[in-house]
Length: 150
Image (cartoon, rainbow, N blue to C red; front, side, top):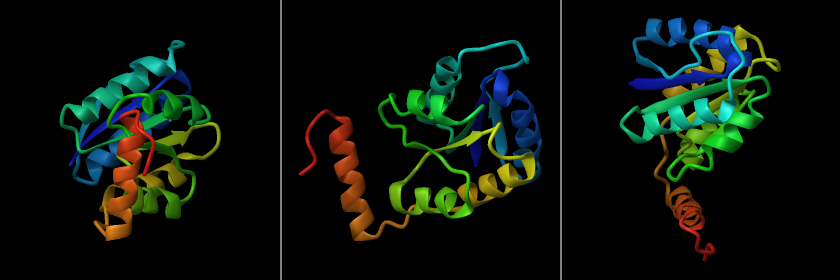
């Protein structure tokens, strides 16, 4: 799979670790920044990762200090379903039930070894296509288009 990976300055160190890990797991990596430890604005990184996913990357991984800022920013972009996940169940289930396409991590919340485990759970998961999950995803997409869910 092709994976877009982005981080602001707070997630720069963890991003470096995860880039190597994701490549070692056999995936193609697209680094969307930040490229230095200099202070950066997380909405820019979230937008770059989201655009990479929409342009053809299979999934994305975003990192900031808490994960909250990039998650909020990424979810403003039509077609993106990003969630902060600091446990394996959520990282896997977010894909299986909600077709999550960006995993968000907080570098000040978790360490690099847990981050690798979460990335592995996220990348190995597949949307279930069970009727109840398809129905719920359709309602999410309806909300995204500005219509109330029915």
